[in-house]
Image 1 (spheres, rainbow, N blue to C red):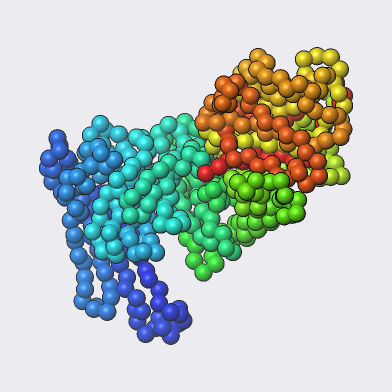
Image 2: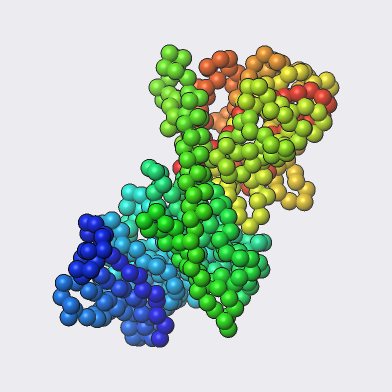
Amino acid sequence: MEHHTGSEVTTNGEGSGGDAAAAGPQFPLRVIALVEGHGENVAGTPSGPFGYVTMIERGEDPNKGLQTLPMMRNSSIAYEVAGESLRRYRASASAAIVTETHRLVVPFQVIKENGHTVSTVLHSEDDKVALKLHSGASAEGCGDPAIAPWENGRMLMITPCDVGHRRVYEFAEDGGTWTEALGTLSRVWGNSWKRTGPGVRGDVITLTIGEKKVMLFAHPLQLGAGTNDVTGSLHLWLTDAKKHIFDVGPISEVGEGVGATSLLYKSEQLSLLYESGENTSRSLVFTSLSAQLARIKEVVKTWEEVDQRVGKLCPSPSGEKAAAPTRSCDAAVLTEGLVGYWSGNVSGSQWQDEYLCVNAAVKDGAKTNDNGVAFRGRGAGAQWPVGKQGPNQLYHFANYNFTLLAVVTIHKVPKGGSGIPLMGVKLNGPASASLVELLYDESQRWKVVYKNEAKQTQEKSWEPNTHQYQVALTLQNGRPPCTLTGSLWLLKVMRFKGTQRRKFHISTLGVWEATQKLRKAPRREMSRCATFFCTTVH
C-alpha cells in the first residue's frame, strides 16, 4: 500500500510568545493523509476501497486519537472526474491546503479507464474531512500536481505533462470552475531543455509582498527528456500570475538530481527543502532563500514603479476633451495586460525591458534624448525573441493573443524599392519566413505585406521628421484576423501630436508563435522608436 504525503494544518491564535507555547497547545492540530486503496473501479463497479482519509487531531481533549474515514463512495463523484470513469488513484508527494474559508483542498492524480493520468483536486465542503473530487481535470498525461491559493476563492495548479511542458490551471476552491490559464502561465515552463518528455514535480506557494500578491514556483528542469534523466538545476520563479514572470535564479547545484521540493514562507523567512542525489543514495537538503527573497522584493517594487510611470502617460483631463468615455485613459487601463515595456534603457546590444523580464536585442541603435532609441544604417533594428527563449517560453500567450505597439518617427523618405520594413512578425523555423510586415515607401505610404504578398496600401499617410506615429500590430486567436471589410489590414496607424498620442489604447490582442521584429532595414535613413510595448488582455 502506498501513502500520500500528509499536510499539517494549523490555525494560529493571538500571539506566539514563548510563555504561551509553554502553557500547552493554543490551537487544534490536524495531520491528514490520503491512503491509496487496493481496489479498482472495473466496468463502473467498485471492487474495493478507492481510498481512505486518515486524520490525527489534537485539541483540548488529549485522548482524541487516530480517526480513519473512508472517502466518498458515490460513483458519480469518487469514480468519475470531468465526466469520465476512473480506474484508480495514484499516490504522489504534493501538499494539501486549507483555504481562508476553511476548505481542505488536496492535489490529486488519477488514472482513467483509458489508462491516461490526469491531475485534479479533492475538496471539502467545509472544515470537515468529507472530500469530493473536483468536477474539472487537467489534460491527459499530466500528473504530480502542486497547488496554491490565489485570489477571490480561486486556486492555481501546476502539473508537468508528458508533452514536455507544464500546464497551469485556475479553479474555484468550491469545485465550481476549472480553466487552463492559457493567457498567462500555462505551457510557459518546459520539463526539459528541449521541452520534451515528462517532468518532475515542483512546488508552488503564494505570498504578499507589500500590497501585491505573487506566486513562487520551484521549477526542476531536466537535462534530458526521459523520466530518469538528471535534473539540471532547480530554479525559483516569481510571477504575479497576470502579466509578469521573472527568473529569480538557481536554488540548487547543477546535476544534483533534485526530486520532490517544498517551499516554505513564514515570518518573513523563505526556505527550501528538496530531495537530492541518485536513486540509491537520496538525501534531504534544507536551505535558506533570504537572498532570493530580497531580490523578489526588489523586482516587485520595480514592477509597481514601472506601472506608475506608464500610468502617467495618460494625458491630463483637460487634454482629453475629444476622447469618448469608452476610451478614457487611466493608469489601470493603460497597464492592464502590459507585459513588456521598452523605452530608453539600452545597454550594449540589449534594449532592456523596464519590467525586468525579456529584453530585446538591438543592432545599431542608440538612446535618444527623449528616452527612445534611434536606428540608423543597413540592417539596424531591434528583435524581441518571443519564440526563442529555450525551455521556458515566458510569453507563450503569443500563440494566442497579443498586440505589439511602437511609437515611431521616420526621419527621411526612402529612395526606390518596394518599401522598408518598420515592424513585423517572423515565424520560427529554418526559413524564418516573415508572416506579416509593415513597410513605408518613397511615396510616403504604409504597406502591409502578409506572407510576402502586399495586402493593403494606404495612400500618402506619413510625413518625415515631423510627426510621431503609434503603430500597432495585432494578431488574434493564433491566426491573422480579418476586419469587417474582409481585408487583411493587420496594422492600425494613427498620427498624433503632443498629448493626443497618449489617447491611443488597444484592447484587441493577437499572436503567432514567432519572433517579433521592429527594424529599420536598408540604406542609411533613420527611424526612431520612443516606446515599444507588448500587451495582452485577460
